[in-house]
Image 1 (cartoon, one colour):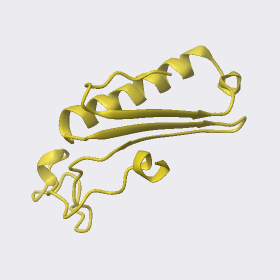
Image 2: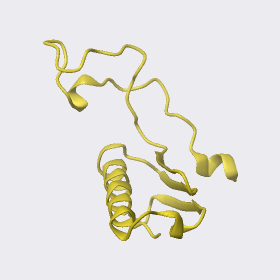
Image 3: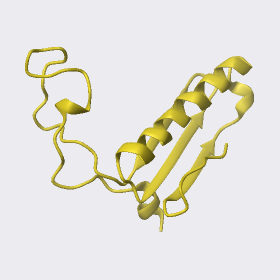
Image 4: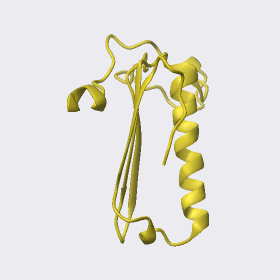
Length: 108
């Protein structure tokens, strides 16, 4: 798996496990599209300076994560989805006091 990000954004892709454990080619293709969208969102919205993609494939499950070290959003005061106080998108979120650590930085 390869990701394409702007040259000023550090990136890393870590894949563990065997692709043969995926049940069909369309599952692999859908997983790729989901992860690509996560990376695109991180690049477009988080102003991230680093992005990491992790995929762990086992015979029983696939776990995937897209991490970015960017702006993020505050989750300490959750709002009800669809309530009159909150819609269903970024307008519901507030800027965090600090971003979560980057898995790239932790491995350095």
